[in-house]
Structure formats: C-alpha cells, structure tokens
Image 1: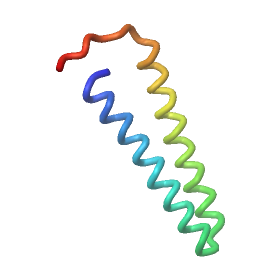
Image 2: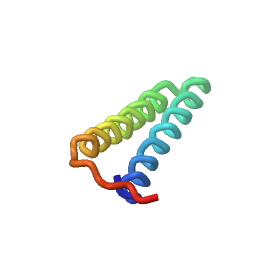
Image 3: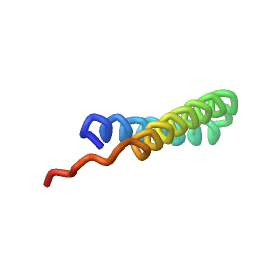
Image 4: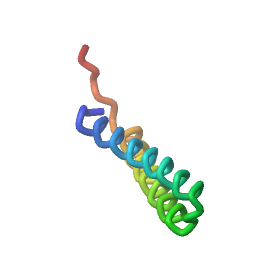
Amino acid sequence: MTESNEMHLAELHTQAAYAHAAAAHEHSTGDHASAQELARKALDYSVEALKHTEEIAQSPTQSVQV
C-alpha cells in the first residue's frame, strides 16, 4: 500500500470518527435530525474506507521497503 493510499484511508476513518462524535453530541442536545444526518455521513465515510481497503487487499502485493 502506498503512502498516499494509507493517508487517504486514514483520513476517511478520521472523518467517520469525527462525524460519529458530532452525531453523538447532537443527539445528546436533543437535535435528533442533525444527529441522524451526521450518523449517515459517518456511515458513508466508513463504507468508503472499507471499499478502498478491500480494493487494496485484492491488489497484487507490493514489496515493502524498510
């Protein structure tokens, strides 16, 4: 996996985590509509990250340089 792939996947996971945290905060304040929208965005980021991870896993292995 290249460094740019790793950074892209990390960014997707980070965006999902922040969206989940924001959804939890909105839910705790009683704004359930906003919480639901943020939770949907978090799910979208998570699904996209999973899709990219599976694509990378199925690609031919690359040599790792240390």
